[in-house]
Length: 313
Image (cartoon, rainbow, N blue to C red):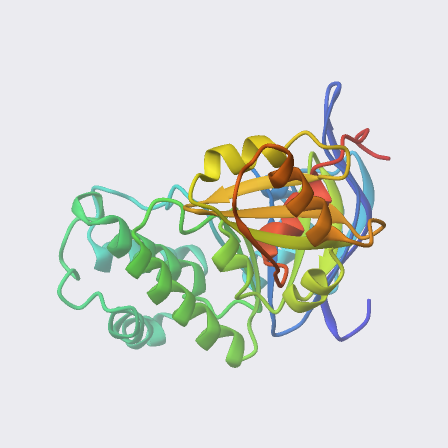
């Protein structure tokens, strides 16, 4: 394994009977960066994370995680990784203090340092007022902060986060990401799965999964520059009529409505995207202003997942 990567996988696959949850996945996750997994529910994100931390045995393929081979001696990874699920694996009938103390015992954190470490986490993750509160009575954002504190208590080299912000409000999501950037700055490698486009844009690198297959991989900027699509934005007084006029034409890959605006994706093999859209509108006597737009990550996601494909192709 190269010292620059925390995770390297080659041909990693997981089948459940006839279902190919993950198919021949190659990954290179740089150390000290936030690496995102973007994809809809059922795309294989959670299955991949569970294989990488040793909770699931791959059907085929291999991975090297922090110098440990998967499958193999996955038990050696336990002291090196932190794992946080979207359901916040906390003990609801225990207080914040008791949850952290219990986790410190599970990881055999040095007894002489436990109090200092717990005090530090309670302060760092803004849990001072909730220290004696039962975890089950806390808000979603508070539970999220406690779950993250538990996941990093033992100073893991690698933090695996499985859709950790799916049950919290936007402010809690922003605060959570601020904490992730601070962890990455100290050298922690973070892999986070998400279906939120704005979160994916915050990652240093990301992979897009579709039905178990990696369909794109790179920095957000690289992916946006390589959509293979013209992006035409249409502003119309009647966006419904505009969409009906445009959608269904052979040159149009996708039309998405965003308020009064439409985002139209046209493959780059068609040289005159503005003319294509303008002619479509004119043919139905629909007025609208058309401009070429810069691809967003959502445009990338639509472009790489719209084509039907055989899993494993």
